[in-house]
Image 1 (cartoon, rainbow, N blue to C red):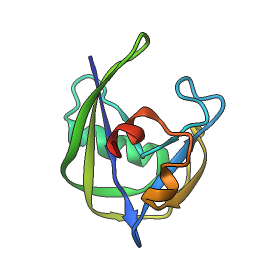
Image 2: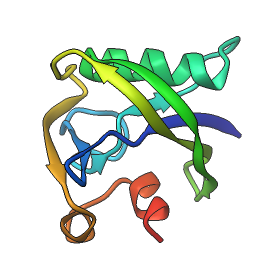
Image 3: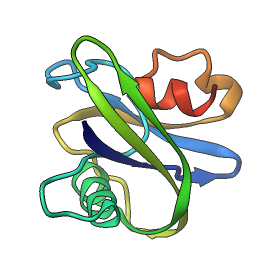
Image 4: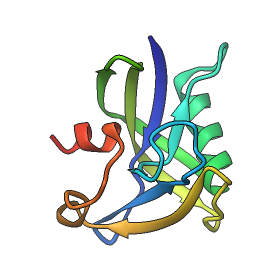
Length: 123
């Protein structure tokens, strides 16, 4: 099982979501929280900070794990750790892995084509 760390960045009651590009190797075109898979030798916190920086250029100070759960299907076996956020700085500049970003309310999120980690978080 691999670990993946995601972060909840909330502003004015809306969550930051990133839309995965069509050439992304997994979950193409789905809306997702910032974050990604843990590399060997990294702590969960190091993974979160690195992944968010790579995907958005934001520098974050995470808080605690808000929720964690496992996603298992025929292709994946991933343990997701969803962190709350203490603070962030910087301006969002997306990596090649994502086509766009937007701020959505929980009600709006439920109408989107979502990555499993986002779906499971709101269940």
